Image (cartoon, rainbow, N blue to C red):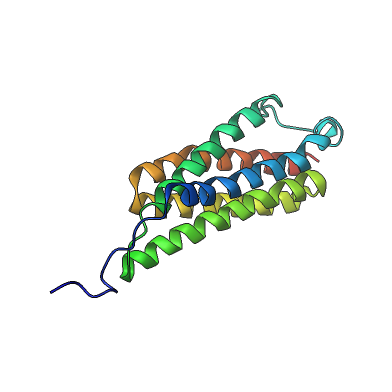
Length: 172
């Protein structure tokens, strides 16, 4: 007797659609962040008091490029593991939603901090981002160890960014 249609596993999304869903939002967050950040680095940001653990400005785009690539690969892996139904499908959907929540917070930080020159608002957003990244990492680890591990450096960087933002807020 063939399985009922609700028990069959749907075909995984094709490579191109999955790639687009994984890459385009991450690229949009990256490009958008750069548009808000770049004009403020030599002006407003340069005039802020910063702690001794602030890296040189060239480090940020290098680190973020690597992190965005790892984020896109992580969500691409998760998108390819969509279960058909049941609790596993709900866990998968929650992990995907968590990823896009953290990505939205990631995209929100540059306009708040850099364009808005709002240090306290930037601190609130980056701490929320850190919590969302930790949550997403935990959810990804339960679905795909490699995808979860790909987010660990991002979680570490978000923790560092939180500490840096807090220090800049306190000093200014």
